[in-house]
Image (cartoon, rainbow over all chains, first blue to last red; front, side, top):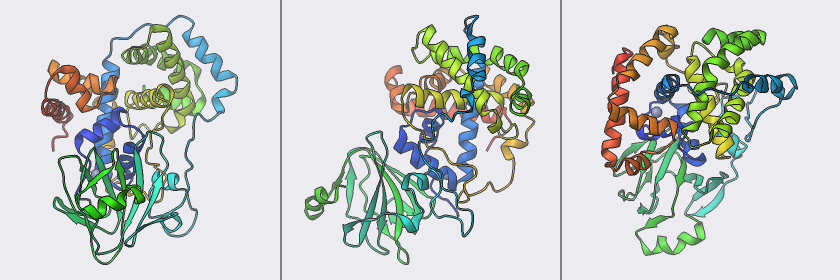
Length: 222
Length: 177
Ligand SMILES: [Zn+2]
């Protein structure tokens, strides 16, 4: 997989520092699974976080603090898992899955088990359940077809998982990551040959240019 | 410090854990107090973080990260799922769909102890304006626009200060690209 478009340094830092909420983090983490280069970059940022932590002027803890921690290690509670909110689904045999973790855990299945919901014009979506009030969805755009031209009221992240699309800003293949905001008006066009499947994160409804698209928008929930 | 975590992982070594606690707990407390928690709450969060250090010690890989980096990630994740009650997706290193590193190492090849010292030195010489934006990002989990608003400077300035800071740290680590 040759990745040409990566998350911005800004987005990676917000991920590394913990400033991103769940849906945006999901898009970044899924890209990281596909991109050793960005994993390396995030590791470097986390190292800076560690360096800053180490350089802090210590604030003394109470005398009882260590004993309190020790007491919690001996009562057996240390064996309990903390929070495992999503399943990890690791197949033991067969070909490697197409969807990387953590996305696969959210869907509860690999690509062949995605519960697609028809959008019309040959397009499908699958809403990904996150809890930060931001919309995360898998989109399947039929090969060779356009998505109606639109602008954004907020931010939009798109991560291609299979197939490819092009728009005014470039060509995006598997693993590629696009950041769009209210300043970008684009008309993504799925490449021919194979349906384009991508993870899209949006914090506000899209703004379509054509009246027809605006009319169907409430029906499609996009 | 790396060896201490390994000792906790392999032998449940309490003396090693005490040393880790003495070094990191006061720093974690200072870290948490920067989110605006009072001393008592900060101490509770710190204790929870140290419990997690004990629980998760087996996951620490000294070839991948330094002790301070690893403990930073524990404190960061704790802050998110404890204080913000939210979840932070991460790639799973055992995932068969994960694209592996081109070459093992890279970052990991450098002698960790030596690198920790160089990183400390690199951060120490950062200009104040760059250090301030890093502090807001890492200690107060502010996004770039929030940092710009708080400091009353343009977003582009925030971005360029952060970029300069990372560039500087990178070159101090001999990782210039
Ligand atoms: Zn990348």
